[in-house]
Amino acid sequence: MSRPLTIAKAFPLDVLDIVGDGPLALGCDLGTTTGKTSNPTAIALVERDGLDNAVRLAARWKTDKPEVTTGVLVMICAELVRRGKRLRVVNLDASNERFFAAEVRKALARLVRVQLSVLGSKVQYRGESMTLKTRACARVEMAAQDNRLRLPRATWIQRDLRQMTKEAGTYTAAVEADGSHADFFIALALAIDALDDTGPAEAAAAPIGSLSGRTRSRFNITAEEEDDLETAKPAWSC
Image (cartoon, rainbow, N blue to C red; front, side, top):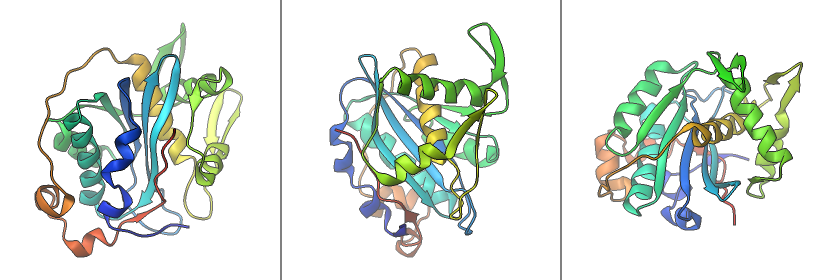
């Protein structure tokens, strides 16, 4: 069950210790409200380890303060860059939150390349025309079928992945009582899709302190606002 946590407690930086030296992509399905049936924000940090897609960090939370979500993403990306990790791209779902996604891209611009993805847009894949959502979700399905998908052992992740169903080539998910509808699946799909399509990228290291310092100040996050963050416990893989 989700519970109020500060950002620092929800995302202690040592959760990134598991990240190796392979190329990384961070997928994010954005949400900006906290209603009972509101969609949560979900993230998936995926590392390409040989032929495998290893999920190094998975999380899902609700907040109605966009600056909190932005602060989380800045903190994670800045720490990865500081450690010299190969973070190629952050892939954001901009289907319903285009203005917010653009603001997040601006905030991350000095750290990493940010890609805005509209899941309903048409793309070509293996000679066929399909939506970006279909291509990205198919890549998750193929990775799982080929045993090339390594996931954290967390019940909420298993439940999230099972929410996505495929019928006549279309991927859909029903909205659950808590508002979730395969949000992590979408974040995972965005990360894997970005890894499959992105070439080498460079990033420069930037200093970062605790959220109580520079990051909180930059995004005008008070200590009280940090307490408003509702999050599922982050999970990471071995």
